[in-house]
Amino acid sequence: RNGIAGIYPDINGLPELKEEAARFVKAFINIDIRPEGCVPVTGSMQGTYASFLTCSQCDEKKDTILFIDPGFPVQKQQLTVMGQKYEAFDIFDYRGDKLRDKLESYLKNGNISAIIYSNPNNPSWICLSKEELRIIGNLATRYDTIVLEDLAYFAMDFRQDLGRPYRSPYQSSVANYTDNYVLLISGSKIFSYAGQRIGISCISDKLYHRSYPGLTER
Image (cartoon, rainbow, N blue to C red; front, side, top):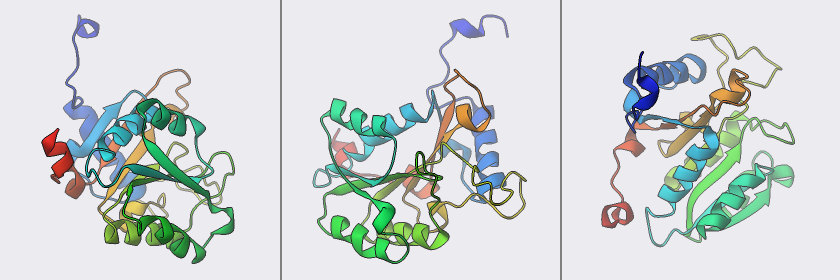
């Protein structure tokens, strides 16, 4: 459209894009999410940055982000820039049921506002199992913690064909096990848009409409 480059877009995102993002999540993850919670971002890095800012202000008692490593080092640099605290552990020795006790050892302290991990994982290329995602989701609900699921390498578990819309198998996600989630989806990587920073932050319906005292005060 003529002149479109000279007009600031709606900060919430174009309705058409939000609707298609919700369709994408349904087609490839089999999760129902309203378009209003699908927020376009200039790459999932911006989505992560905004998520960190928001999560760290929801509850003044929860001032720390927990990383399930290995992950994307730049995300820790983002928190350093913000002056926010973070903790981390390497999942290598805590696969399967071992993950529950390790994760709970952090959450029970009451200071974790969000958990972030990459799945499929870069650089190790491991994939969390459905049982591990269930553990993360159940504990996130129990301890009222938000899960930031970095899906930059969406559907790149090539042991099975995850690229067929509306057909099983689907991309595994913590969204099946908790309502406390934000999915960080990078169109730049999924569709090989080298150079263009295109992403979507998909916030669960329940989380999108939730009110937090810390944010209300802000």
